[in-house]
Structure formats: C-alpha cells, structure tokens
Image (tube, rainbow, N blue to C red; front, side):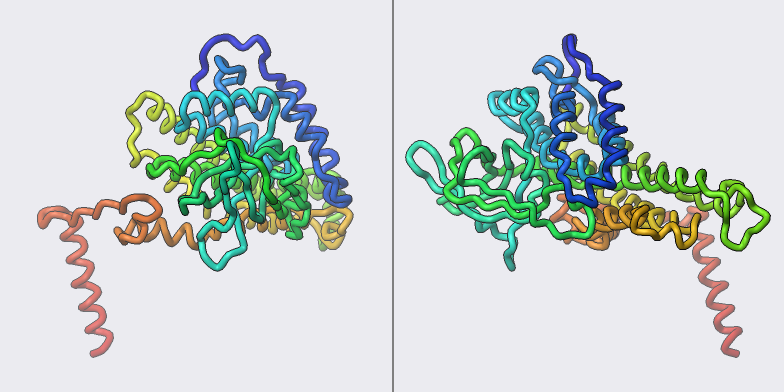
Length: 430
C-alpha cells in the first residue's frame, strides 16, 4: 500500500506511547479479573492503528509492513492479548489491497478508516478439513448458518471474516456484520494463556449477508501464500512482544532485589555475574525474535511492492511464506526458552502467584501451539530435500544441489576423507 499524498492528521505517537504505558500497567489485573481490553482496543482504533496500512490517499497512514509490525511487537510487549486480536483485521486488509477489485478494496479501506474492526473465524470441530458452515440464498441476500471455534478477535469485531460452503458446493469467503441477532460470540476460550483475545465460539443462525460481502477463494498460489504467511507472522510478532515483556519484567525484578541465594557477599543482585549472564541471554533471545519478525515483514514489503508494479511472481509469494515458516521455530524456541530462563534470576519469591512470572511462558506456549512448529520444520526440510510433498505447501521444491566436479577440491577432500575413514575402520577391526 504505497504512501501518496499528504496526511493532515499524522499518527499521534505520543498518544500511542501513553496507550502502551496504560496497557502494560494494568495487564496483570485485567488477566486476573478476566477483563476484556475493550477500552484499550477502542483507544487504539481511535488513534488509527486499524488503518495504518491504508494508503494516505484513502484516509490511512500508508505505513509499510515493517513499521506496522514494529508497532505490533511493541503493542504485544504491553499487552499480548491486544496485539493478538488484530490478526484477522490486518490480514483481510492486506488481501483486499493485493487481490480485491478496486470497489471491494476501497470499501474495506473506508471501513478501516471509520474505525471498524475485523475479526476472524475459520476453525470448525470436524474430522475433516471440509467446511460445514453454510451460505444459502434468501431473496436478494444470503443466510449464514454454522458454528466456528477459536474465533480470535471476533467478540470485539464489527465484521467477521470466515469460510463457508455455498449452495453449489464451492467454498467461499464471507464477511458478516456482527450487529445482528443471528451472530453470537461467546467468551468461552479456556486456554491457560492469551485468555483475553476473545478466542471463543461464534454461532451464526440465519445471519444475513450482503452479496457484496461474498467472495470466491482466489485460486492463485499468491493469495493463499499471503494469507497464510501473514497470519503466522502476526503470531510471531505477538511472541516477540511476549519476549520483550518478560525481559522488562525480569530486569525490573532484579533491580529491586538486594539479597541473592547463597551469596552473603552480594548487596546488589544485579552485580552478580550469573544474574548478568542470564539477563544477557534473555535480552539476546528477545532481540533476535524481534529482529527476525521485522526482517520477514520487510521481505513482505518488497514482495508486495513488486506485486503492485506487476513484476511479482507466485514464487515470490511462496518464498515469503516459506521464510516465515523458517523463522517460526527460531522465534518460538527463543521465546519459550527465555520465558523459562527468567526464573534463574530469583528464588522462591519469584514464583509467587502475585508476581505472575508464569504468565509469559503460558502466553508464549499458547501462541506457539496455534500451528505446530514440528510440522512447519518438517515441511521446510522436505522442501530443502526436494520431496514433492512440500509442493503442496510451497508450490515447488528446492532445486537440487549440483554435485561437485571431479576437479573441484571439495570432491578430492570428500574422497580423501572417505578413504581415511575406511582405513581407520579397517585398522580398528584388525
């Protein structure tokens, strides 16, 4: 979404910083009391965070994905629930900008500029991957019926984006308005982390849908790669924010302590080398997680810029998603490790329920469980090894690595090493 024109109402970064401070200050009490962050979301939308990716020419701020994800990580560091609920909102806007007809694109831009919020509802409890939610014609409109689960952000939303089965058997994408009797969102998510994301059950009973809000699923590889890649990248941004928040809390805890287990000679815990080493390790992990996320966002900026210029290939989109999958395991490993490692800077007092240090691991573990990392790593490995199965995800496999020529030094080294190993083995058996 290119930056064009002049914005008479620049983004209020001072108010944004105040929002982050308020969110961070009260996040623990909101979790304890299960208070959904509706007021904070409303503030973020009034500031225009829901339209930062809308071009300036359409009333937005025209931010790059890099800038958007930098702010998303910061938001997650203040309140990981609040950042998480933007997942469906940002992905639908990206899809509309990249692939929708201009009229449809502009309609969603206008809604974002008006402060309307978009939730997401895809999951169903089924033994198959088929869609059970139905869309049937009723005069000049459609009726939507079905139940969706893990509908992150939908309890806050003006619109919910979802997949449904049309009367001809085709799966279509539907945007349904929530301000009607046929849509009911339940706050019944019982996970041990991310409890305030509204990731509960949503029921649709004869919910009315305007035909303009029904769109066929784009059959190009690019459409699916964009959605899947950005859906995952938002989760990784939230994880990176959790890592930053855990670091901040650990540093605050250490700076306020003056007694260390087993060290009577230490009057300031922060002067202990082992504590310094632990905080350094946690800091490095948090920094790496954030850096990987921002780098992936910038890569998507470059892909979408080529797409707007008409020069992007489906391979570009496949590469974008593939690289998000590549960093997924690295971000998850680092954040899960650091949210455990922070306990090495204290003693029994650190595990007090009142301090809530466990919440960082619980949130990180919950986010990491959305899309099992071992499956993603296996797909990347299959791609690198040229296994055709990976083509279902990425559209292709990695090209084979050419064998070294006979006159290549690597070939001679390999042969020599093999002979040496064989000779050593023979000597061992003699």
